[in-house]
Length: 300
Picture 1 (cartoon, one colour):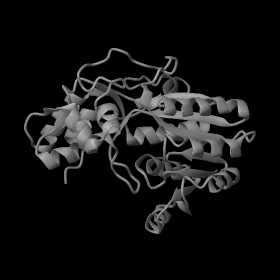
Picture 2: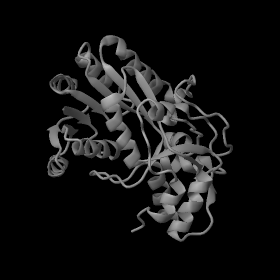
Picture 3: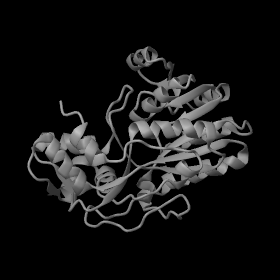
């Protein structure tokens, strides 16, 4: 199968691309720079030079491919619409990458939510995530346009990526901040909880979804959860630093920006991916973020 994949040089897209290469698929990966194009080529991924904003290119590649995997930008509605228009009536798979910040709250690290979402739980997003939820719904509804559309909604991803970009977002952000300040911090009291998944298990689910997911599927991608206080404590032990300290939200926002501080690191995002297991046969192998931090996370 020939698959056009956006985000091929990124953390998620690179992991998914290499997993699909193992299945014998031909991957054509969107990439901007000539340097990254050469490095993708060396990994067995055919580079397609271009930008996500080039909707004519996206449409052309989608029509020529047997399937499309969008792993570049969960919030780019223009690119999604270009793909869906090009794929309408084809029955081809379109796998789209979303994220569980769609169920984020405004805890700012101060409490642990007891609200847990599965695929049947209605989502009423905070204002900052309403546009992403609308995109996810647009993709699910594209099943009615003859597209085998699938939304994979990833929780906090951890683990070393096998592609060109080895680091995810949340844990490396905390590590970088700790190395700058000499102190591991969690937003507020760090009581907020996020579901999580190892990058290899995440990539495996994309491969299963490509083969088995029905049109209009939406699934959360998770296998475990931890509070940011627990993650920060594991980071402190791994980095050989003292006890974690609270990061006042205003300081975190000033350093990281509102979205990262409030949603990525300060919110609760608790989900259960029932459909991945029951309908796609997903059997993830890595179940503990804190164990990975303490035993496997690179520190060099």
